Amino acid sequence: MIRAIVLGSVALLTVGYAWPPDYAEQSRADVATCVSYTRRTSPQFDAQVRGVDLATGHVDIQRSAADARAEVAFASCLLAVRHWRLIERNLPSPTDPGPIDPSSKADEASPSFVR
Image (cartoon, rainbow, N blue to C red; front, side, top):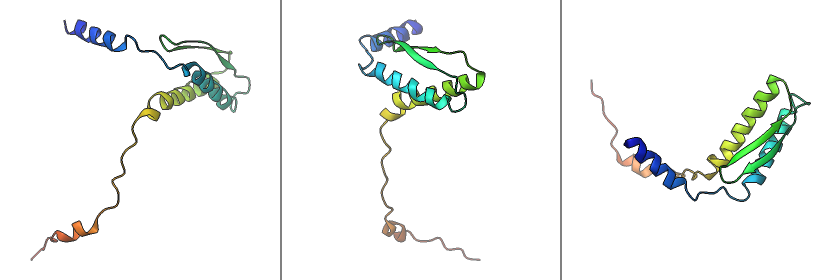
């Protein structure tokens, strides 16, 4: 029963959600950035976006056969870039606490130790 409620809630929340129109363009830019990063260690590496499904957010990437080092570099870069673009960039910035008021510290009596 709880599973049905959770699945129903998730379905209601996600119905009608669509990725922004510039999502496909951002995905292509992110892949291009990571390809240039990966080519520093593996010049033969190549990848390109085949297509982007705006209904599901799925990005289809075609990669050339490359060594394991290039594959790891590309995957790590893409994960970091997409995480920043989709999550961290949209988080609210932490508020600055401002300078500490020294007068509030002076009002407190310092503890005295007597032997």
